[in-house]
Each structure stands twice: as structure tokens, then as C-alpha cells.
Image (tube, rainbow, N blue to C red; front, side, top):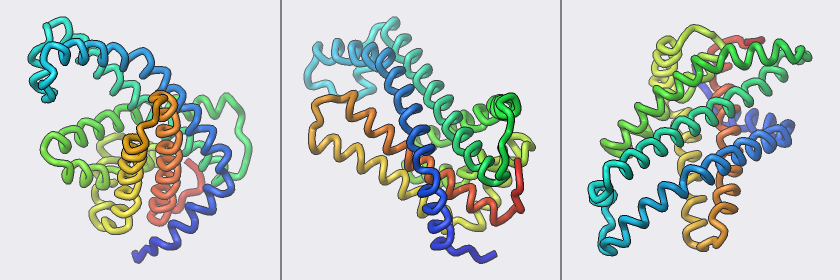
Length: 250
């Protein structure tokens, strides 16, 4: 099957134009939840970090800083880091489900009862959470090795959440099918995903260059823009996957 990237981008932009308010609301809401979690989690980590740093101002290695911590401090750092990663995965799961629900109502072109919406939403959530958790572990392992493997893993498993939501056939099936499709259509998926990753890096660099005083305000803006780009990417991935399956409803 020959796929034109231009057509996919045009369809994605058309969908975003028609539903930009909903996408913005999703981005803002989940950005706010991340900021709230960081408000309670990050300060604790920063306090321990700067306490150790004061002992030796020439100490810049994270490994050395971790070695200088007491067992209690190390335990606190690991606990908070784990909690933040879990919250990040939950947040990402809700974003993906929210965007897919928006797409669902556009595809079906009919109204559903609130009961059916909640039933669909929470029936999908456990498997989708486990899937994203597993993908996150793979990507983190790739980051430990090199950045390039992490990008490759991100591309190969990018449409697995879409497959799981639409086909409801389990985590392993979604990962396998995503890998096979992405392997055969690598070029069509690599560009938008790399652009999304680059946009996150550019946003962070902008905040660093201009030295924005209000760190929480910058992070809030960063998460809003980053989440909006993520919403666009999810729409693109759905459009891409719809070329392989005649999707009427899911």
C-alpha cells in the first residue's frame, strides 16, 4: 500500500482545525494535573539534591550525588521518581483515551449515553495503562543504551495504543501488529514522531535560553504545547492506522 504523507498531514490538520477547542481543553487540563503533581513531588527531590550539592560545589555527576546520599534520601528519591513516572503514564493514558474518544464520536457521528462513554473509557484503561507502562520501560532501556534505540522503539510501538483501543485484542497482539506495520511503513511514521520529539527539545531550549523566571509558569506552558502536539500526533497515527483497517466504530 502506497501512503502519501501529504494526504495524512492534510487530514490531520483538517481534524485539528475542526476540533481545536476540544484538543486545547484536553491539553490544558492534563497539563494542570502534571503541574499539581510536580508541585508536591519535585520540591522534595530538589531539596535533597541541593542539600548534597552544598557539601561539594564541584559535584555535578548525578551518580556521585546519588552515592553521597544517605539510604533514607536515596529511598525518598526512588519513591518519588517512581510515583512521578506512574503519574506521567496515567496522564498519558488519559490523554490518548480522551483523544480517541473525540475521534470515536466523529467517526460514529452519533451521540452516546454517559453510561456507555464511562463504560468504554474505563474498560479500556487497565490494558492501555499496562501497554504504555511496558512501552515506557522499553524506551527507558533504550535511553540507557543510546538515544537512537529509544527513538526506534518509540516509532515501532507508536500505533500499539491505537490498535489496542480499536481492536481490543490484548497487549502482545497490539505490540506485535504495531511492530509489523511500522517496520513496513517506517518512513511514514518516523518523520512525525521525530518532529514531535524535536519540538519538545526546542521548547525546553527556548525556556533555557530566555531564562524564564517563573519556572512553574514555563512548565505549564511547556506541557500545554507539548500535549497539544501529542494530540495532533495521536490523530495522525489514527489516520495512518485507518488506512489498514476499515474503521467504522470501536
